[in-house]
Length: 184
Image 1 (tube, one colour):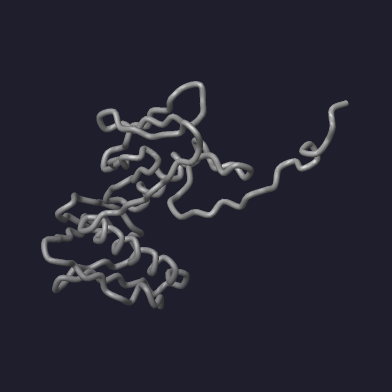
Image 2: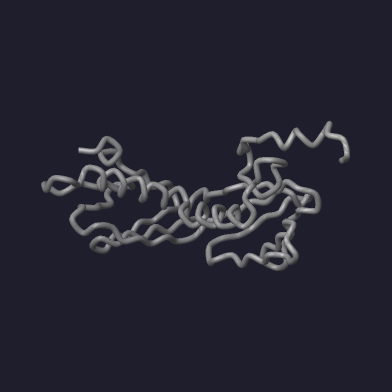
């Protein structure tokens, strides 16, 4: 039996859970999340907590722990929400908001406009070099952050590009042969 799966998920005040078969719906102050899990697992809500029990069949230990962790992420998402911060490095590189859309100028011939999916909001710092992706769904926030980072990943020579806040980029030395060479 999974150690993580055995622990119950506590529902804070103001959070309601609705379980219909294998579909779990969590409602809280920041929104509502709904997800369907494996029908073999027994998911129950009692006394302000949700418990997950695996079937007697072998091979469900990992799925047991995963299901409990996903339900816990849903509860945290509707109460606190999730954030992922990214920073932009490079001369002339910046981010700005136009309505709800994020507009990135990252050294290309054109600006990139990113429309947020439902449940995601962008917050841009005054410096226009730091922005945050916020939402209730942990997976969606992380996926959106990864897509934006891949639009201009940091390069190893000057470090220009979009990176996660606090991410260390492994730098490479450039060509050293041309520095002292005379003209031919």
